[in-house]
Image (tube, rainbow, N blue to C red; front, side, top):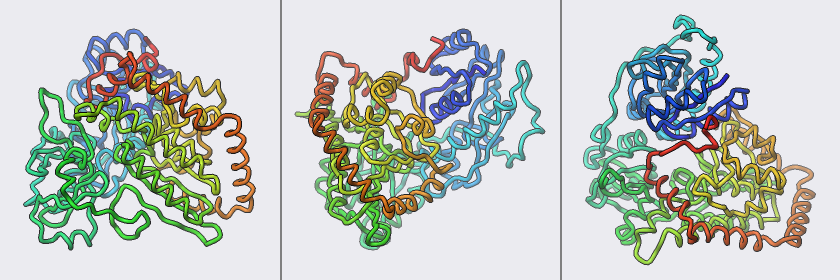
Length: 580
């Protein structure tokens, strides 16, 4: 059928439905929810059988929902109503949850339920992470079930046909900042974590650092050893730094706070979300640095961790990195290069590069670059160049690790430079629900680097590489396997993928043909280098990037500014709005 996706933004859920529904044979077009008149025009132009709204921040106009079926995806079970469904669930520690597809009506979330899919929320996960995994997975299933019940010219399906529903929760209002504000003197670390996690992604939990109001994100429990060592500290005291994070004492226990928005909004524009040690750079510099070894046991948090598995003759190295929202700052890329250098010195046959649970990587850290525009003696262009050189170094370290096999493990989505960083590994394994966006042009016509001009054609060929970069569309793991971008996709969800990941890596390390595989890899790398050196690919890509960063066309800088400041869309990109 013809389906119009009406959405506030083309977020992960909208992308997943766009890809899945098109793969199922539906004609799908997208309209961003900009104004009622624009929505009315889109419906008139595309004439959809169904309008599907996966992510809205305001009501569908009556002129649309009164004339044709409009199905709204609500991230809560039937009877749950209101704009902060998942926020409330995390704040209250709910485990039994669900996603509902209901018909738009005069009241919010009050229309006829067409389908719903139960799910269990992970304990201790952030709102954003739950949305990207449990909610997206359940929503996809619920939408399929709802569309399967659609009949041309028919009304809503009878409620009696639906699966048993949980007890109705009723209307719950928008959570206000005060509802989850932190009081370091009153809240223990567990309560502070719950409040921050309920607001992670957006809008952040209100709290104080160094006597200044902030919105707090990306919080992690400190270890029992750190709790004991800091027991005498005053609640609210900032005690140390590690990577992007600051260590803060709560009423009981301590937390690492990874990212913050420092200060209050000015003229409706919120401060940038930055690593806490960047937002409070001067204050952080005066604190002790508490690093931890890359290879460690226990519950000491850090962005990177290395471990080894398997027998001595078939060892697997496991380098895990989890950067907030998949964004890689210059500092994080440099740390990853150092970690790869340490892994190179270990006697392993396979090295698994395990990206974050939510995102493998999304390339360079745009918020960090935007902040450079306001720093004396720096610029966004200079920061962009440093960031792209740093992530290029990560890709180069992988490409030149030729004495073992490397695996990129995509537990979460990958976009832009993060996709091509994964392609620098010998094998790319992905969870079946993962989305990939192997292109750059959506960020102001960026050319891109990370050796993509070498990596992409060798996997899919020159014509397909050009088509992917022009198309600017997401794809799922199955499509990526069919194209050759991904070698294997397995696991219905993240836990299932992770359960199979290590056994597959161990099997690869123990494979009788391992020596032949490594020798073939070395011969191919040598032949490719003789045909055209990696330095040549990099120089050519960076020449294009310099024009993006320093040239007369400001498209990249405008797109980056709009992205980091969440500027409202003025139109729907034409590669999505097929009806236009």
